[in-house]
Image (cartoon, rainbow, N blue to C red; front, side, top):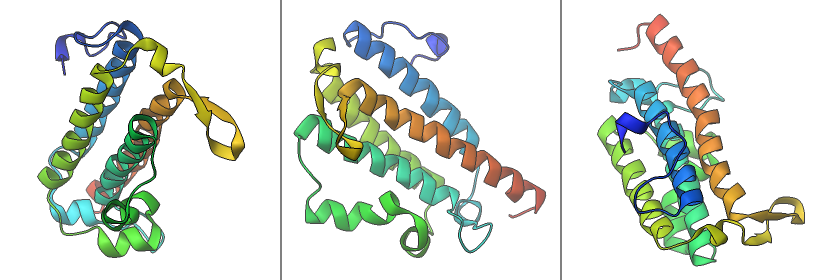
Length: 178
């Protein structure tokens, strides 16, 4: 991630022009997510504001799970296998399953999961050209979507959940959760 160009939606070395612009937006979204969770300990990452909420840790895992889902869909054109489902379903679904399974991990654990997933995404995107972004497939509600929209949705979902993380962090700080 080139921090000198973080506020520029522009070409990114090693990517075609449109993919580079997508990557620059993904980089900014990720930087702001990482800044949101910086310095949190395991207890804070596991904090549940109420019986229905998701923890910051589970939201971070959700970001990785969503990215995996779109890797499989857009790069490999397949559904997750049994092993992937077993590992990622709690993070993908969140809710009670996520609350029961995703806890006790350090911030470094979550950051590593996010980095591994993002490195794979970028390796795959480097192998594609801008025409690939416009390839269409059937998506939600039987409607068409292109790869551009799908990868926009990956970081749009991250931005949405980052808002939840910021909200939770403010409560953690106000309640002095250590």
